[in-house]
Length: 137
Image 1 (tube, rainbow, N blue to C red):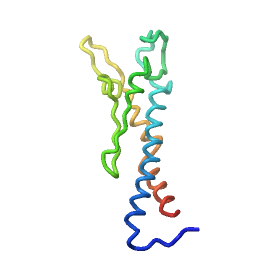
Image 2 (cartoon, helix red, strand yellow):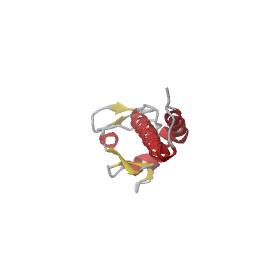
Image 3 (cartoon, rainbow, N blue to C red):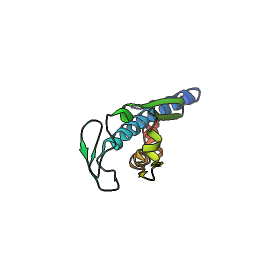
């Protein structure tokens, strides 16, 4: 049974609900980032077999995991009570995400795992739904 909240308790209860809902949504989105990096869904042109540093032979579609450094470098930071930021601490994360034109004229395709994760999780809707449930008790 839900109890009545007194006016002086509203802010504290709302902040608590926001914190809980944000942590849950952030956890879901963080897990989806990892899943997107690991999924064998990314195109690679030309259609050739590549031997990775880990010895695996891959064609396409492929995941974007070689030694696992990109995936394991993911860091989440709560930068305020209402904001979370993810970063990937390898020097090539932007090249993997955005693609690149190399000096030899070849290109590396973009593999925008964060955009795909956001499209899958829909974090604003997920947060709103979770917040509503927290506030409804």
